[in-house]
Image 1 (cartoon, rainbow, N blue to C red):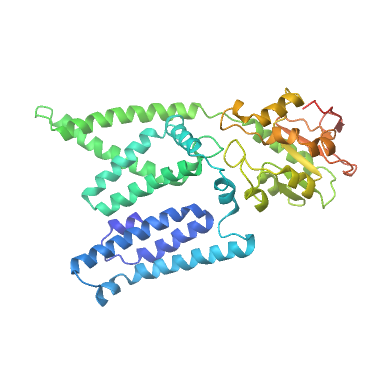
Image 2 (cartoon, helix red, strand yellow; image 1 turned 90 degrees about the vertical axis):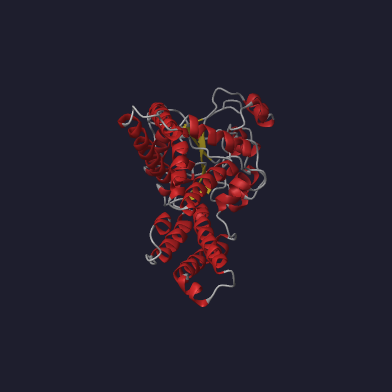
Length: 411
């Protein structure tokens, strides 16, 4: 996209290929449509500028000079329209299920999005990278303003998008990944240009410094130190293994070895589990793969994890097995019930879905006394069976009894 703007206009093969690439990115990740819109806007502005130069309606030669842009934009339009129509026919909605899950019925929070964005800048060390990338895009103004606008527009629009969506449940700035290559590329450009300016100070130290040289030298020193320090501390903050990831694998391996009936329905909070157990049916309790839950009213808590409908899941779907997250074994029933009904007691980004499940009447009536004791290193995943579910003879046992009986208060 940027190549097209930098290269001379005689390189006319770029627009078609790049429009198709951007449209293909929308197929893989729908919010990549941001970049398609930015590039299309850039082409439109270029065309308007050419029309203004002629001071009249566009002539045929002008339209012919944009024939490849028109072909590329038309190709992208048909790809995106085909995707939308297929999603409507297959899923019942034009947009992906996760869009409605995270944005409809007060699911998202601008405050949470801003906190997530600030966390990415300061905790994950992206602040100096973002500053340098914007400085780098400003240097492109000398070559062409359109390139600078494309780069800065791409970076800033994605930053605003992160805030608008309410952020992400995963740590370490996962939502920044889409623009990280561009951020680091432009940061490197800025550092190189600032270094070149700083070298002029070293080689011509006897001469009077200009304001540009002084500011460039100071910016290079400060931003380089800030970049090294913040990136180093960000790496130190990453710890492995993540407990719940390790426990998830233990549960999957145990269920793989079991002799469960082929028509078993398993309810999960982590939808990725179904890829490891494709022989069974799955129900996503948080609605990432369930349209009914995705379109339901949002509850307090972390975006993407604040929609559930246990009346629907336990009363209508009736899963045979529930793989729960976070046992809350230190809480009694009354304590858990009180927290679920007073979510303001916990931080805004807390997760309530496990607590809400443990105090739900149907869970207590049909599941809570049938905990399958699968030992996990961090005790973050608990597995429950529905009353009357026949498991077969080869139920997995990991140094423990197969079933444990719990009282209503022993969560």
